[in-house]
Length: 127
Image (tube, rainbow, N blue to C red; front, side):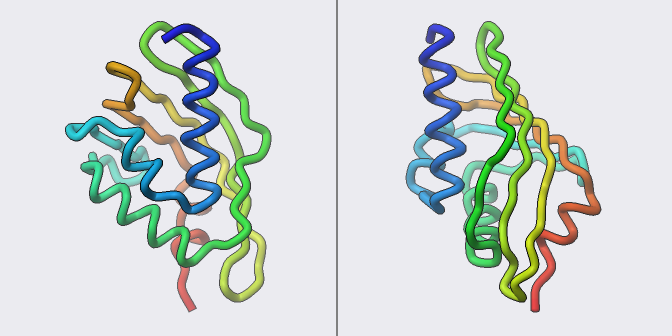
């Protein structure tokens, strides 16, 4: 994939999460993808990550990836952004992040996600 194709892929991927489009999210991953989070040092499978994002979509509305900054490298990309949303109690929350995606045959086979655990706790809070 050239630089423009990688940037277009990244935009589709994060736009899908904003829109709650889990099918596009799932289709963006290889079947053997590993999704690692710095805050728990665990690696999720594709289906575990889809379930996590389905839970986030159910709890957080009006999702928007703001301040997207992407850098393409051979075999993938890095994106920094702030995910904004509204919890069920009406409070607005933000989640700054840095995501490193490695691509194989046009799909994500490894995603490393760096998040602040305090922000993650607010996103996961239920009422």
